[in-house]
Amino acid sequence: MSLTPHGPGFTFLDSFEIIEPQKRGRGRKWLDPAAPFFADHFPGNPLMPGVLLIECAAQAAGVLWQPSGGAFLAAVSQFRFRKPVLPDQTLDIEVTLEKELGAFAQFDAVLRVGSTVVTQGKLTLSRALSSVV
Image (cartoon, rainbow, N blue to C red; front, side):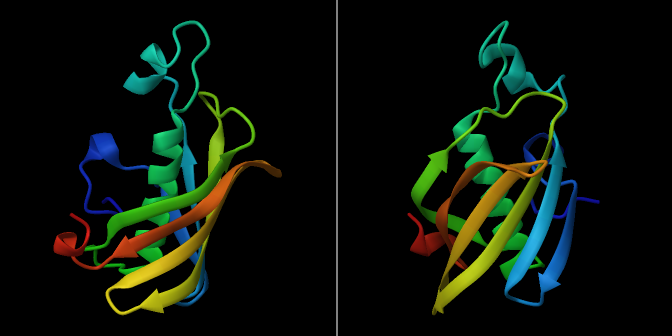
């Protein structure tokens, strides 16, 4: 069973744990070397695309904020890509709710491989798709 409303080809969370209810949580994702994006990004030197790292963070934030689904990515800011993320690594994705603004919520996200921070930034989710477009 998926943690998110996404189909199996676009699910970027294997597990999720609540650290502090409605405030902080941690997801995990093992990066299967057979994932299609690794074949073409970049041939011979595969890397996890940055946009998919952001999607990992957005899915983790969505599970924390709206566990039954229905959270949509509305904004991305201040993301920094510090280290490449490679096939067969496991991402730890920690998200912290910073503030809620009606139908919106802002999160801080830190993604690690082991103890090394590979990506971090902020994102905003919306409860309604109509608020996003």
